[in-house]
Image (cartoon, rainbow, N blue to C red):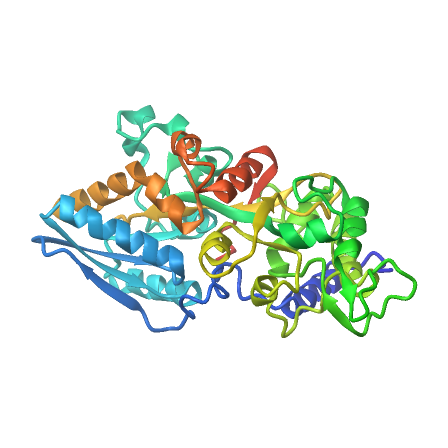
Length: 411
């Protein structure tokens, strides 16, 4: 059992463990969607031929980027006076590219980041205050139609520095047939960690068909796992919150990971692998393809998994909320957010605003990306037969979601 560690010790353990838990950096959220492998080379698209030309940068390197470009192609058809050059580059390249562009005085006319990056870029004085775009200040955007707690994510000292496109975050995809074969009701999510382990043990099989709780279970020859550690960093955050902990203090000035909650969250993740044998060691394990091949029954992953599950597999699936590894329900989520540089002006500013407002009014089309539209009215209008995961997981963000950590020291 892990003992209480010093701040440095626990941080190092967590960093090493989470690096072992295989997923890429915090915002490389589409690395396994099999649609595009993030590289440093921008994916450039020229949309429209209008005389007012704007540039748009974002990090949507997966199928969600394709969805947004398709929406923008429709936008320029309806607004032939505007043309757009979109540049899509992986998040970890986008951040330094943006910083360099601001230093050089050549930022894009509009860019899409996460709400968690608002404090950093706002602290540099490069983000335009968009407060007057909202109806609370005479603008066209209905502030109360943006779901909380995500809406507050773009606000600093009462000023709005972005327009949310979505809420995206963690839930779980469930292989209905595997659960039914194990005598587990796929429509009933376990309520706590003990129930979760009991269910996952029923879903974990060795080569002889023995289940993980069987004394004769062969842990060295597992052919089907109950679950997997897909993106350890954000899974750990959700489990930490669920156990009453936090990453940093509310004022963003003090690390608070050195807690019993942090130890408990990490220990439970480790126990899922090495004590209960219901999840594989993540290094080198492809959780998406293993789920698609029927070798993982329940995969904790993000809203962006929807297109992979629906379009690239034949799995009969349903969704749960985040796995109950904490003592209370909790899940990690973030928000893709349109932002403008302070230098925006004139016809280009008008065109950028027109584009953002158009996309915001067409967020129902954005649901095809798998993400949860930021506007409540759009969430409520979604077809449950077509977008069950958007609806079910989106509700959990409002019920017990925690936005990814915001701090001027984090990017």
